[in-house]
Image (tube, rainbow, N blue to C red; front, side):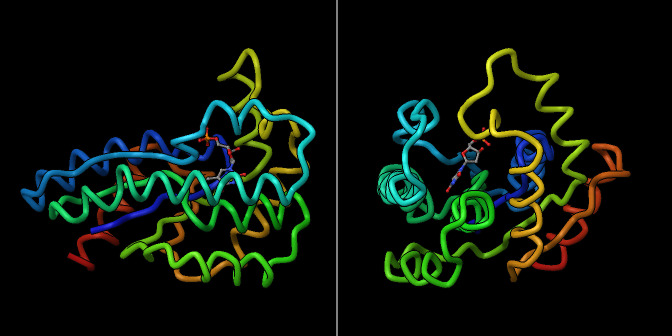
Length: 191
Ligand code: TMP
C-alpha cells in the first residue's frame, strides 16, 4: 500500500505516521517504511527565500521525482508499504492555495509528471490557529514556509478542504489516540 498523510504544519502528521506505520506493519505482516517530502533537496528548498512560486513548484516536483526514484518506487516494488508525509496535494495546497498559482494549471502539470497515485490519502484537518500555535511552540527558528504565518496556513487549509479523494479526519477537538483510532478504523475498511 502507498499511503500519504497531508495537512497543514502542526496538524500531527509525523505522530500519526509513526503510529500508523507500526500498526500497519503488525496488521499486514509487511515491512512498512515511513518517509516524507520534501526529501531529496529538503535543506535547499526550505532555506530558499524570496524565490518565485513557479520556482518553488518546479523544485518540489524535482524533489518528488527523485524521492520516487530513490525511495518510494523501490520500496513499493519490493512489496513493502510506504507511508509518506506530504505528496502531490501539498503542492496544490501550498503553491496554489498558499502562493497563488492557478490550481487547474498545476493539476495539469502534476498529471503530466505521471507520479503514481497513492492507494489511500489521509487529510488531518485542524483549526489553523491551533496548528499555528503548535508550530510556534515547536520551533525556535522557523523555516521559510512556517515563517509566512497564520494567513498562509488558513489559505492552505481552505485549499486542502477543496481537494478530493481523502479520508478526512477532523482533529481539532480530538486527542492523539482518538485521531489514531479513526485512522485505523478507516484503514481496516480498506485492507
Ligand atoms: P514539513 O515537511 O516540515 O511539513 O515542511 C515542509 C514544508 O514545505 C511545509 O511548510 C509545506 C511545504 N511544501 C510545499 O510548499 N509544497 C510541497 O509540495 C511540499 C511537499 C511541501
